[in-house]
Length: 527
Image (cartoon, rainbow, N blue to C red; front, side, top):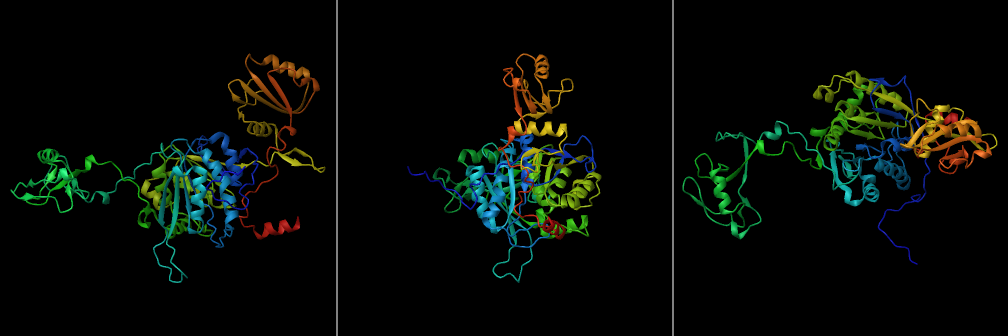
């Protein structure tokens, strides 16, 4: 039987399925900052594992995702190794897009991806496959620089792209951009109309309708026909109504070609976003570098994005209070802008600059002391806070005999939280009943223990269960008679119950994005 063909992008390694371990996140209270009740998150660790860690709690909750992945330009960045072949680059991006899709809000979620010409067309086809071609919103052209590169071998590269997809385009609604004083410059009130300022437009239509070709008489007595090849925009009856309502302007002497009046109070209070974003509106690379130098004069990040660019995206795709996520956080721009504009934010960074750039930058934002132009424009004075998280180590490690055992770094609470995540339970320890570590529904619970479970202990637990409740027990060992003793209690051994489900012991899925430092290279050689 012939395999049914389909239109898709193929590459080496596409069909290799990753079995990601659902890690837990561990807060580092010494690095968390500001309001202790703040929900904002700064996560240090491999971004694919971090996204997997977020999946259970944040699926369907993120309104706006922005990512700025490595462009695969072959350029040597200090923080990124961008020299990836197309297949390797696609293997980097695909699994992350898959999880990012699950995190998006089902109705109002959208993802925005910065990219250049090198991979933009591959990325477009890949995103069509992941998000659905019908959910493609637009490709934005961003003017990243205004100077001409006279040393360019072919053409001077002055723009990048921002690719936008909605989780559900039929439901997604973009926000209008705020009007500026400049946007209202075309409005005036030269005839002192009590309805306020207005702008005028032509009264003829370029696509003619024979029924709307008729003579009109100006207040001065002049007879006019629509220009050749056109018709009036309105029926003759409607035109008369508009004239009576003072919606048609014939000039101060009543002798000009008619113009239709549109009042500022009647137009939508905002501007529809366009797909070309000029540097004057959203900044460029030079502005971004000036911002980062002001924050980190001695250790600037090589490939930042300007804060105004991120603000434009957040203005279109989110509202204050919405969740925003960036899984390639870089120097922390997305989280900083989200914080200053009242969004809740999650930033993930895998390099050392989670500590050297993102952390101090967000502290300055919370303190209101980053000193950047956007903060001044917004009137930002500080406030809020964030929590700093690290990925927990792999739950299992191999002992000297090659057998998987629970890593000794896991205490009882960490183990219980990890097993909850593996089994699809929400970690929610009960204050009264020690054996309720988490729940998947109101009546389905989980109990995790490293001790030996006896039949007597099982009897005691069962006696405390209410009618209709069920319990999964994950134990290192248990008495044989415990198995199948109660219909509403399932008991399984750890780690055996989770072996084969995922890849344990792997901490890095970055595909050499992060360049090893000399010290790391020496350490690797020594080992």
